[in-house]
Length: 284
Picture 1 (cartoon, one colour):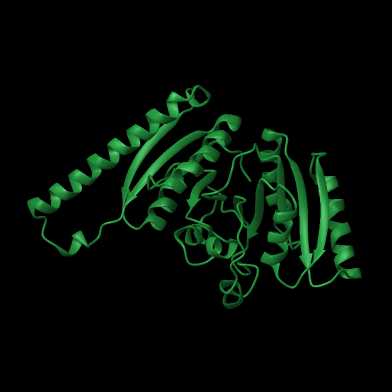
Picture 2: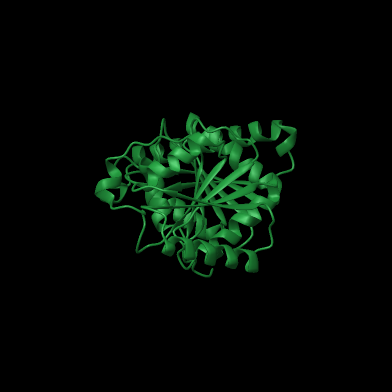
């Protein structure tokens, strides 16, 4: 996975995206990445099905001017903080459904990370199902960081990497390690299974050996916990420990990690930001 050189931050100027912005800016400050602020104007009706009447053109122009002003104000607010005054910041306005404009902008800006805000008291299942964030996570070829409105930035002191020992997890962990190095974070590699068995012990030891052999980072620990419900196990871990960031890996053939019908019935709540990494990354 690449270093973090470009961060895409889609915003709708709401309170939840304002909170997520702090995370994007702090990562940019630590990594030296450029921050791309964007807003997507979702048309309430299909302009393509209408004649280009003057009033339609005027509505478009007025919306664009309003959004341009809001983005300018947002950039000014960022630069008022001395910590962020030297950051490289760009702004852009797109028109269309947010999911597609975010993905297109991520590709156009060579984004290495997308940071989005999650609305309200959001459970892990809500982030992973039935939201714009969920669609972005499923379709994005780069990591996506979803930040709940109640999340507090603390420097990513404790990162939990949830693994099921898939083939791409080691590569994904390498990205997490590079992020951890920026903040001197502790990484907890967490696996949940129905019960501890010889098979899970072998998998744990094998993965631990691979991590030790392939990854140069000393502040890593390993943990397993018996549970029939993935989200429940992770949420309980978050409640027991002060976790700054939860990391999962998205595999197209097996994501989310539980059957969708079952997962949608859950409402486990988490204040921890969720970083989802693509299990397979397409070369840019």
